[in-house]
Image 1 (cartoon, one colour):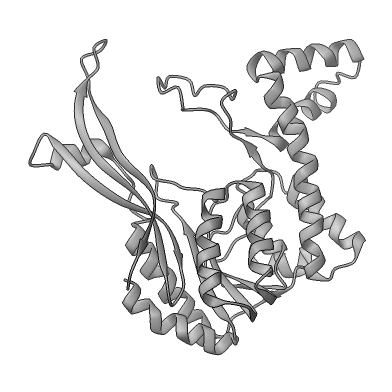
Image 2 (spheres, rainbow, N blue to C red; image 1 turned 60 degrees about the vertical axis):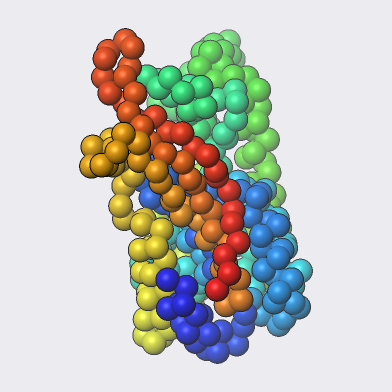
Length: 333
């Protein structure tokens, strides 16, 4: 709980000579959340309370999200400080890694991991998830997976003739809407531009910057490839600091406490909840995101109730989610 974390936050601020902000997006199976633009007003409020300061430390845990939201968040934080660092206790993937590129330095534990910054397109024209009736259930389209498909056609199948390559693209556009493919192309250029602009704070020469961006955008392979601390230091050359044992202990205590509060290790299984419920419906309130400082707390919450309904085609009992609220709530100490 926050009252247990405040002394730990104060200790980090004292050790780092900075002001601390904490940002978590849920990685709980079935209740995942992502970096999104709705966090910007919440961070603005937190930063207004802090005011202009020499240094801000962002304690960040996320599997990623909106690229432009990450870009805007870095610029917002930097408008309140001269020096910006990111403390990484564990996962910091995709747009989380992009935020890290805009920091002066990273503090990475042994468990900390960065990842490729290959964006995925999520929009109304994305393909439907097979077998799922929910019209909002869409397949994210990875920028680099689209590129890999075309490269596979060229290199592995030897398709180089322009006419045959056109047929490959037409086949792809049968599966993925052409406007989504256009967005994929635009996103690839955009992510490289944003990464290059952010990396000026790392004070790395242009040649090394280009190498890092190329690796993060394509050469690292799968989007879930983990870049651990030693690789970030030795292979990428990013400005990384190893925490002392005392600082590591504080970071771990904070992460473990927030992980327990958000139940990150407990999969969301609606039918199990309903089967164990003592009434026909099961009311719920799930904490799925956190923006916090010593002074303030904002929590992303989903509320509603679960009830069993019968599938008219199969007769199978299925969970139905009657969600009544979803959004950020301010919590007083």
